Length: 131
Image 1 (cartoon, rainbow, N blue to C red):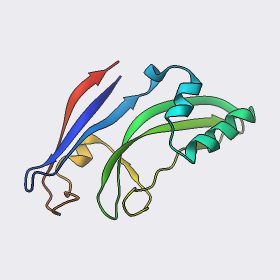
Image 2 (cartoon, rainbow, N blue to C red; image 1 turned 180 degrees about the horizontal axis):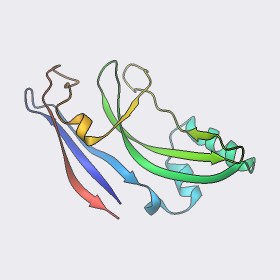
Image 3 (spheres, one colour; image 1 turned 90 degrees about the vertical axis):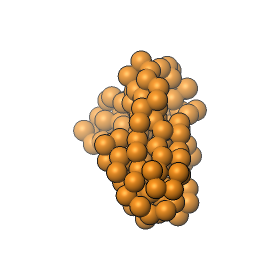
Image 4 (cartoon, rainbow, N blue to C red; image 1 turned 60 degrees about the vertical axis):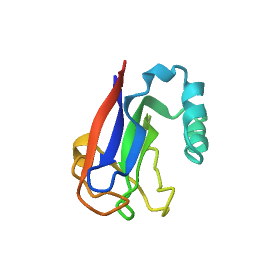
């Protein structure tokens, strides 16, 4: 199950929509999941899968926030438990400032600082749910 969120700033009217969080099981096959991944994550995951080192996988959409410029985005995250018990997780970087992104919950977005005006006035609401 997952949800699509819309975020807006009560102070300046800034908006972001189409932010997804939740299961990516509906994507289906591993090839479809790989096709939906961003570069260079796609090649990195494909290399791990080709090496027959993956014990289990979990695919989910997540909400991400840049601690530098406060940009919000959503990305498809693939977590792989490898046969040597290590965990591999996709990493994401801000499209505006190239800083590493932090995964956040909708509760952490609600009341957070707006990326446009800098006021702590963001509201985050679920607009669509899926199975």
